[in-house]
Image 1 (cartoon, one colour):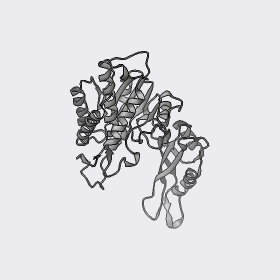
Image 2 (cartoon, rainbow, N blue to C red; image 1 turned 30 degrees about the vertical axis):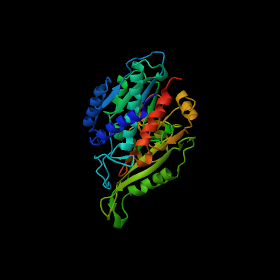
Image 3 (cartoon, one colour; image 1 turned 135 degrees about the vertical axis):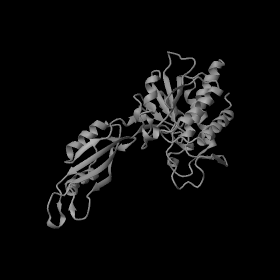
Image 4 (cartoon, rainbow, N blue to C red; image 1 turned 120 degrees about the horizontal axis):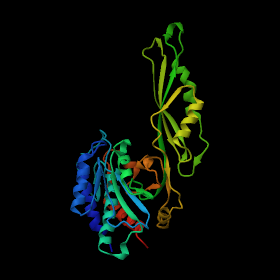
Length: 360
């Protein structure tokens, strides 16, 4: 029998320390240090690359599939509407307030405790608590900015991963699909001239038809979990002053892809329909999904969980293996003022993860 209360208390204590250690994306060194000190104190062997920290099982069984337990240690910058100190963990009525508590501290400390549970019980030879998997824990950096020194630095150094569980806040429901992201820069060219004389070629007008197509086009392949691929013109810039016909118009297009398309496919389709010049900033943030028939997803369903599709991006976009998100908290609290996590959510998460990975 696992003392979930004790592991929850340890998880909350660690989370309080992480909240009080600022870890905005690309500035996670101090938070990574907190994690490695905690791992040392609890006899967990760790590895580190940049500010990514991971633990491997002390007994790696080749016959078992390997599951990556992943959550990120970085946060966004606090918004100005915080009424509390975002870096001062405050507990009120079983609710812990602080930046990163919900996204993704709750998932991080819960998954770390679960890794610890199986490591300690395995070392003690407790048959009822053997895991049905090789568990690898990874706390990744720069998730909020999909940075080059984030998870992509750590993945090549890990053993072969069969599937990942990402501890993003989902109310402990399995998000079996996640939208990808592609940002496009679109440029239309014209010819400058005097507005009063009607001279030149107005670059704004040159782009108008393209913007209307961006607004009205409907992608044919619709995902049962994510719906349709969507695109929005989010920034438009043109002109220098009122009496000069602009010779250039620039727009930024935000594209959210479903798993039915690759980012490259969508780029080619858009490029073939617009007259403006189009450049993709990156193709690397792909949509991700896992077969609902996967044993871990099926076990979630048996436990009363409901698979769904998530519109928000995570490190899943950079994982070349199947993955799904399932963690404590609520995505609606992420990136918001006075962010919080309930202690009961962490406790329930630890218990749920243990049931999910336990050998039956």
